[in-house]
Structure formats: C-alpha cells, structure tokens
Length: 130
Image (cartoon, rainbow, N blue to C red; front, side, top):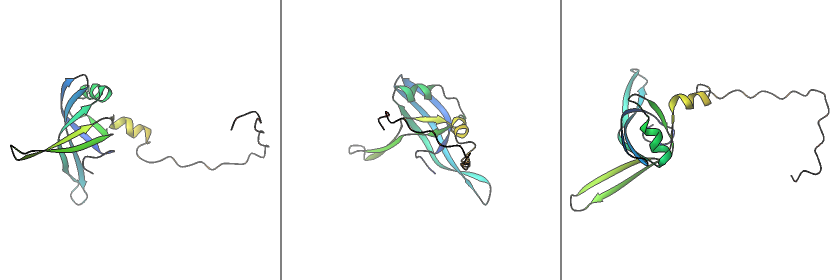
C-alpha cells in the first residue's frame, strides 16, 4: 500500500516543532500471504502540517495506528551537495480505530430492501422551493 491516502501506519516517534508543525516517524507494512509475516513498504519521517493536524499529531504515542488522510510527496535537488531530498507531508489523518468504527469493521452494511407498507405516500408541500 505504501505512503498514500487511506494507508494505515504505525507511529514510532513524535517530535512537536511548533503549533503548526509536528514531525512523526511512521511505518507502513503489508502482510505476505505465504508466510503471514509483514514486510515494510514505507518507513520514514513525515511532517504533519497545519494547526489541526500538527496539534493532533503531537498527542500521538509510540505504536499508535493511524489512517493517512491528505498527503504530499515532493523532492528537492541540492546542486552543491548533489543530493536529492524527498519530503513527506501530511495534512490530515484519523486514528485507525476511529476509521474502523465508522466502517463497521471494514465491511459495508447491507442495504435494507424497501417494503411497501400499503399506505399512501404523503403529498409534497407545493410551497417548497425544490
């Protein structure tokens, strides 16, 4: 899955820089079906930017699980040092358990069929603008 919106990540460290910037170290892994072991797809430092995201990230603890929201990756080449830098930024995220609760354990709820009660439907108010 890697570093992208909707990926689940484990938090390993948190460093609050200021009220609009918190740096966290995360990893994203995938399960190998043959061995039931996990393989890391991404590991690194991510800047949580913006007052809301940085403040929420500052409260994270080691081993917290999060679901990445809006993320950005950019690169910058330093000609003098001849080095390419990759910057990872996150602008929103949710706690993993919060996402799982809203999704009902990851499975969508089945739609209930509509049943005709035999009662006539209420007439719409002709004064409504729509």
